[in-house]
Length: 500
Image (tube, rainbow, N blue to C red; front, side, top):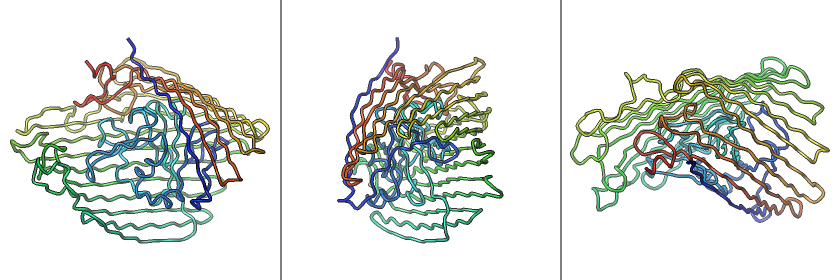
């Protein structure tokens, strides 16, 4: 028996630009530019949060910026020493892909291995794209609920800055940033160090009220080099290192439990314009996470004495784009992921005995081991500069976690109609999405079934009085079958299985 969840909603937003002295809400991108870091295409239901929006709202982190977007829910756990994940329009966090300049982020800090954005600073970020609806046809398994693409600034000119701030809970933060750009070379760097004595997550009646401090370091860099003509090499990197004190939830104060978390993600890229109508790009991306949780042996300890979670993956991709007379854009993609995706889990109880161990000498590969690949095709047709039609299809295949061969196909179609004379845009899209446990990044139950989603979205956008007032109305329908959730004991499974 299949179990399905249906989400239906309407989102209404209005932007009065004159009252806030802000730039008008950005329009949906009207062409497919896969060699650019932007991943919005015509007809997508999408929101772009820009640097001006960051400044106007006063947000300090990516999590805070996303919390201002309708349809986005940021789940934060544990206060200053906690983690944060994102859901879109009812889809679970493991069905939302978070990208940095197009490269996937993930973290062992979250049980479902979704990206942890709790400490990601807004400094050095140009904009954040939130793309709603099933996006597996464009971004692969695990993008059922949508995609969040965080785009860093590209180096321009020559500038450097140093800022410092302090606040409650003995918090202080120092940030250094640098931008440099020339005809052939561009570079941007942001580094941040934050310390705080914090506060206790436990209720005062359940402990001594010991403060849970945190020490967090973040480095983000972006490098580009054009050695000749339209040839470009790029490197993007994000690194975070966090050490903090942790309580056993709200029920007990723990004075000797600590956690360290290290995450690094990056991407190497090569792109070249071969002719006026043909461009191609090669990518290699990686993401690794190492979480180490320690607790002294004590009869009062609720959780484990020692726990270590390590995750990682690597992926190679090739893209080729063909443009015909600026009215038709055709994109081909090919992904290859070898047997190098791993998740290690090792936990001990209060007596030091092994309780859960999915690790073999701390170097075990399981869950998503094997070899898989994917091929996709994307076409965008522009008619009379007012009608934009996009169709996407993607096929994924591989051996998964065993010897059985797996294959699946996803699709997405969208349309955008622009009536520029009256400032009106109408959009609609439909598609399906899949999360294939044997081919996804994470630890899934061996009996977990494929999660699937069917999504339909439509909306209108009206700009009145020039760009002074912008009204955007969206309606959507999502039907999720075999939703996958974390079961609380080490793996993820279908919601129907977890209820048994």
